[in-house]
Image (cartoon, rainbow, N blue to C red; front, top):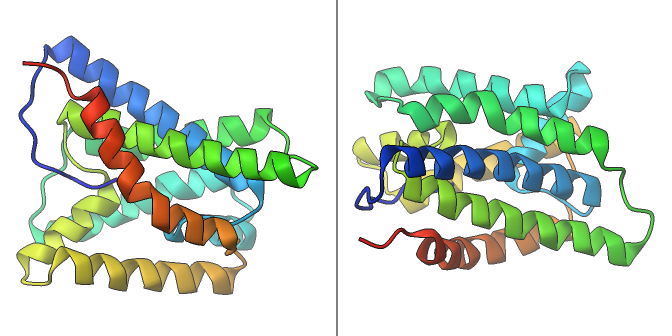
Length: 201
């Protein structure tokens, strides 16, 4: 999810609802992407590969990596917000729950439905989470921190995501057509949902 500077409209309670709804939906979207078996975004490829190698659940790996990435914020002088800490605790747990309760589909059409549904959920979650205004997720905050060192966000994100993608693939994470579809669609879809969920005011 990408940090974008937005006016923090709405009451505290409505912002908290957007924050936690977004985190839960984000985790659910990841769960569907995994169960589709068609490919994951770079970070989830890494998390899944780490899960395969350690025997830990993928959700636990998501949360653990998020916490470790926060340590990199210290030399970058980044400060976590409520949304950052909540991200570390909630997203992976919700992804695990969905993967536990929802079986992988056995038909190609259903696999694609899971893939596309997962992408839409992740994009919708991004719109909710960003509009809550409680700070970036750990991985996006890393991009912001690198930008403060003079590295453009585009270059920093590309380098980091290519690195975790390669590492995840080596570890056995799923790279496939879904990885490409996610990369092409997630940005435009997130922008649509950001406008949709932005409070009036």
